[in-house]
Length: 268
Image (cartoon, rainbow, N blue to C red; front, side):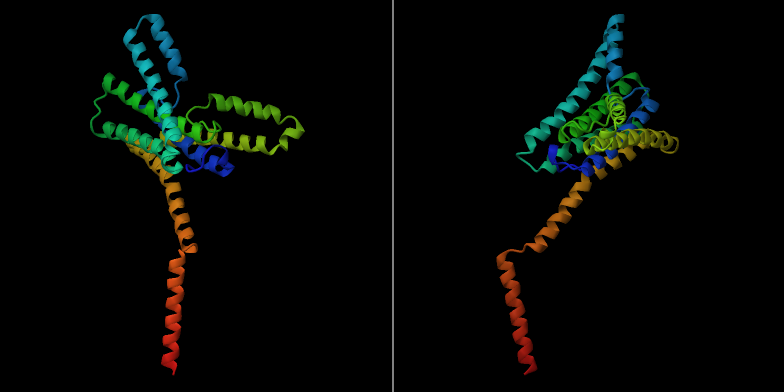
């Protein structure tokens, strides 16, 4: 899911990454609405709130919302910065996994704080919402960067528009047989479905787990990060077993010869 980049990605890679990250974004957004009464997977509404607060002359509130917007921006910037700077210096997998791990740490910190330290003050709420927006910016920047902007999983406005356009295109018979259009439709439909499913799961989980629902999101992010790590290790192990060094092959061949000679001598 993470180790491939841009046009090297397959439909399967995009489907897995889009589904899992949309699921985590939907969960994060719904549980943040329940706990903080604020959306955290996108900032479209925050721009409107910022404009409203400015028009009313509420300087502090406008500054807070602007700070949230900048945090989302910073998360997206940091994701792409790590990817473009790291792909030539470290492995592609590691460069792509770092934003996911940072997102994991941010959401984990919010979950821990809510469980053990939260006193429901306005300042705490503003700070924790900011962390979640930064985390969602990291995720959106990551998925958009490595998929060549094919995958964006933290908001559904543009995705719903793209789906509507594709459905209208499918009213023409020849477009329904276009493989690229069909693949794009399936990908967008999976992302939308998983985002909604994540929200439902999060809402139900909150009834049983409360603030610990954030830890469920963390588990999903860890799965995303370590899925490719496991596959890389397994592929490397298979490759090493099939491509032993010439010295090892000679040593193994010599050992077999010695065993054969010893066996012949024993038979005599």
